Image 1 (tube, rainbow, N blue to C red):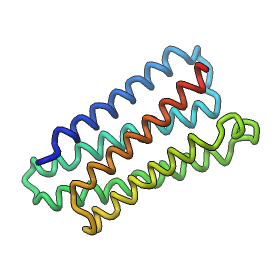
Image 2: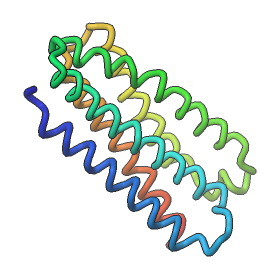
Image 3: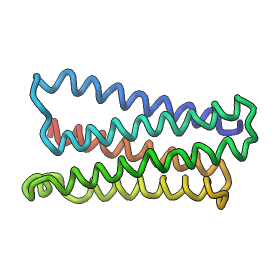
Image 4: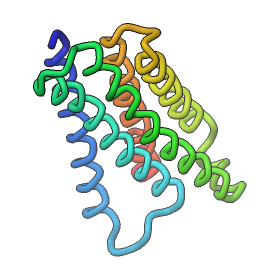
Length: 162
């Protein structure tokens, strides 16, 4: 498969973010529940990391199993949608449940950036699954998913330590 190295790299970076999140949670919680804003970013990092790992490795596994390359791209692209939409909905639901003060503290830049990046990645995945875009565009969708992980991890770090 032509883009194997990129997909493996994307999966590895997603795993690193999930690992860093685990370390952050273990060493900074002091046994207390996270503040709602931190919890929202933490969930987004965790969900997006696992989606990125799954989305990046699934086409490689299908291709290695002997599936036609076009299907090896389209099936994972279609599988991302039912996984991503509940994550986006949960993030929006969590944001809407926050108090006005918590939303003011969070600001709009991070949520809008994260949701936009995720929305572009989901849209690209849908277009690949439908056969309207070439399969390798799914690699770009996974890069967008990884970008959402990055935005939320940075927001979590900034909110926790600045």
